[in-house]
Length: 198
Image 1: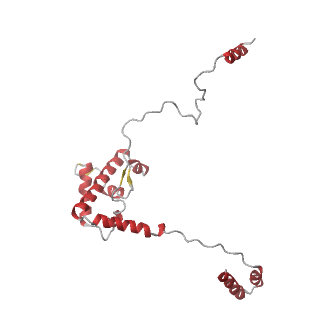
Image 2: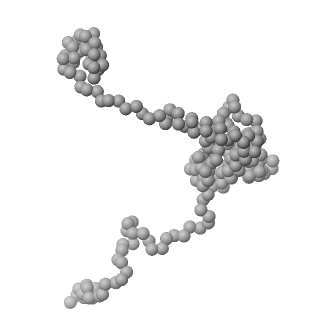
Image 3: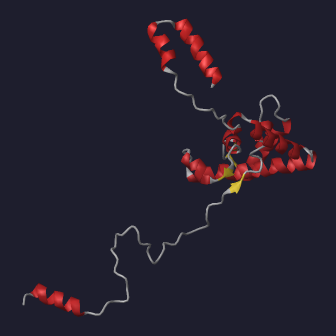
């Protein structure tokens, strides 16, 4: 008996193992040990001023306190180095337009990780400052702005349901014959009457 044949017979006589046989590179099988992730999970928070921001940042109606709050909140949240803010005020203002504050969103737009974290940190601080200011100085204003935002979304062009149209019936051959003969006036009248009747 050859060497390979003796190995096959010994393999056939072995008792089945309790461990399942799997291929090492089988994509359908989940590994038994999952890789541990280190550190805190990334924080994703909902922007509390997302709906009302278009009304607050409108060019002609922007309140005077908003720029002060944006500047002061940014410097308070991330600080400054050599009398220069650690993040751009414009970046923080643009981050306020995000629906959720997530560092990954800014990283996808080309920001470095640390810079994206600073911008999101400042945007969170400024957004909570805007809400606190509105609740403290103008108690009904935040509720009114929220209602206006909901109404605007409800009545906007993109939220209107598309109108359904009934399918057109095929044009009869006697009307098409008028077109092929060159009698365009009679063809137009006959086609209009046909479409109005259907």
